[in-house]
Length: 97
Image (cartoon, rainbow, N blue to C red; front, side, top):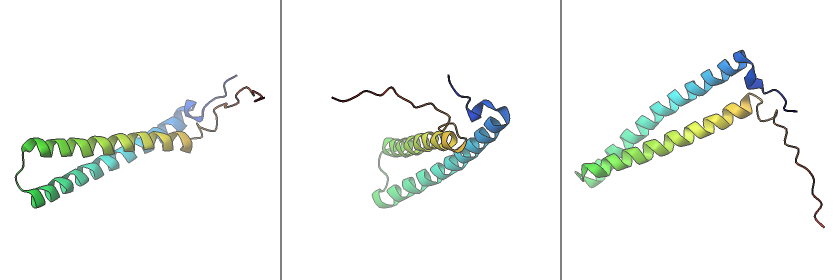
């Protein structure tokens, strides 16, 4: 039988998702700042290179930071709400003879 997850409680889930959205808003602002700093430093040291270079750098840094923060945020949400602890992880035992 599957045990009930703490995220099944609407109040607990609302709090957890609000915290997740708050983390993601902060990480979006941080990502924009890092991308702007990276573009400024690249322009300062490399000059006027192709616009495609700057677009690729901005998209690469932005995508990587946002994907990483989204996945880590989900890990923190799952662990922080007790969802991980509610999973039944009993696997059948196999003797290695």
